[in-house]
Length: 111
View 1 (cartoon, rainbow, N blue to C red):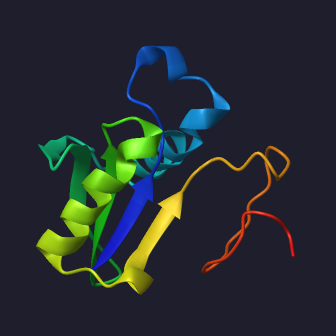
View 2 (cartoon, helix red, strand yellow):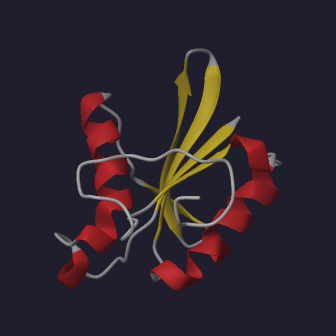
């Protein structure tokens, strides 16, 4: 099982800001794959889907950005998801808009 988390803030004032990029990516995946992020649990909106024979949870925590870990840890513990199967999507002020960076761990700076 995998957990794909898009970070953002739930209030409408953040809807079209860079800070909600994680939410926007989850919404785009949902639209492209014709799935609905419509269930609510552990302070988050989510869905569980089968993708290439693997269960994947798509999660949008409904707390503010700095508290999103509360929702993530609840899903991780409840579904017994190992850390290596958690993907977190968020904005990064250190990279140009429209680019993507994938990393396993470490500093937000390029090193």
